[in-house]
Image 1 (spheres, protein in one colour):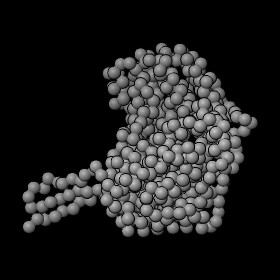
Image 2: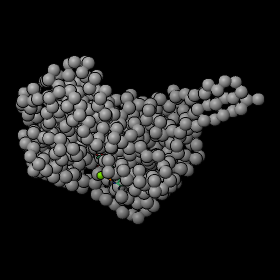
Image 3: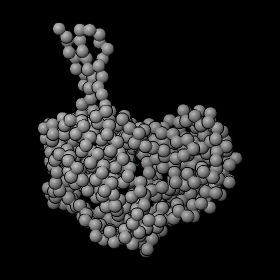
Image 4: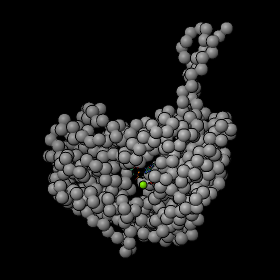
Amino acid sequence: MKTYQQWQEMALNLTLPNQAYIDGRFVDAVGGAQFDTVNPATGKVITSVAACDERDVDIAVTSARKAYDSGVWSRMAPADRKTVLCRLADLVSEHGEELALMDSLDMGKPISDAFNLDVPGSAACIRWFGEAIDKIYGEVAPTGGGALATVTREPLGVIAAVVPWNYPLDMAAWKLAPALAAGNSVVLKPAEQSPLSALRLAQLATEAGIPDGVFNVVTGDGPGPGQALGLHMDVDCVTFTGSTSVGKRFMSYAAESNLKQVWLECGGKSPNLVFEDADLDLAVDFAITGCFFNQGEVCTANSRLLLQSSIKEQFVEKLLARLGSRQPADPLDPDTQMGALVDAQHTENVLTYIRKGQEEGAQLLCGGEKVEVNGAGSYIAPTVFDQVTEDMTIAREEIFGPVLSILTFENEDEAIRMANGTIYGLAASVWTENVNRAYRVSQRLNVGTVSINTVDAFSVMTPFGGTKQSGFGRDLSLHALDKFSNLKTTWLALR
Ligand code: NAP
Ligand code: MG
């Protein structure tokens, strides 16, 4: 991997896309408006990007529909679609430095994570769904003689993908890969804070052989192109990842417009349950990654640490000792483990939660303040609160920043009750050396994914998603294809 200095040099010379991508080419917004995308590590404007509105969305959806109806992608032989998606996966890997750098500059994540995890993850996701395309069969119903009834999967048509800024490239890939694999056309709206890698990805898609109009990117803010996609009468499905409040809006948009299908991956407040028989050293290390990885800007962040009271003291002692080495630093330094928060506004929101924690009586053990790196930027040091009770705001609401809340429990029942006592149900972790307890507890946790003796386990091979107000439907795995295809039943009366 490149050195600190090499990444800095590359950043200075990087060609940045700044127009929307519609019908296979870059275009300005119809109204000519632009917005600035800012590097939160420095506070400096990176570039100005097309601010699309409903007119641009309409052009993109029309282009997507035209491509879909033409059959150029939707009816392409599965094996050929596979070849194209696999080529796109190759191109993502080949352009990995550029894509990683765009995400790091846009939203402040460490370049090492963007390059070593996000880029290979995106390429693997696109390849996996590409490879699946010609291995999925339909069904023949057991009708008996006299009739043949087949059940086949058909694409839905035009999919709108609206994604957040915490994993810009990965979230785009998670939506795009299964949607395209299923034969749909896509209009992607990246978050306003992180439009760059999505635009580059669209250009690479054209290079890979994705026909014009099959993959479009409209840039701009939520109330602009986001809402326009939600309300569009010719969008068949919205696949969304973001906050629960905006997810709810998409359900309203669908109800107000054409009853488009809406699939939501929303927020979380994931519990990390550590029982007294756990491997404590391992659990401490993972409690740190589980909460502070990606500056805590992770939907599945293990932001509630539930410790059995008998081990609490020693656990917290170890945790604080090890946290020292994870302090915010320049994202472009390959040694950096923790970068900048996405923007000044979000940093302020996180600081407001921290103040609320103190006001409501939690005990601040470390962090809690905004810090600067090289005299600038929106950084917050890892923040740990002890003496947190279930009624406190910091125990209930998603902070989406580097803030850990420690709560204690006496026994299994209490741990499960506390773990489930939130409006969210995305993920949970369980630490114990007792396999019976591990599985017993896991079964009673009302979440989409349980990680036993690890945190945030996921893979393109397994479904990812939540229960309750964390959303519904699943990203990743073959189950993701369910969101992007209709089951078509065809009866043939035999003579
Ligand atoms: P967000 O504010 O909900 O935004 C998500 C997307 O929706 C962005 O593209 C955003 O556009 C757009 N949007 C915002 N307001 C809108 C509106 N009124 N109408 C239509 N679209 C609108 O979320 P975020 O701040 O980007 O990301 C953080 C959230 O994402 C957290 O809650 C986190 O838990 C969640 N998340 C969930 C998962 C998961 O898989 N469950 C994964 C990652 C993140 P603009 O921001 O450009 O305005
Ligand atoms: Mg946003």
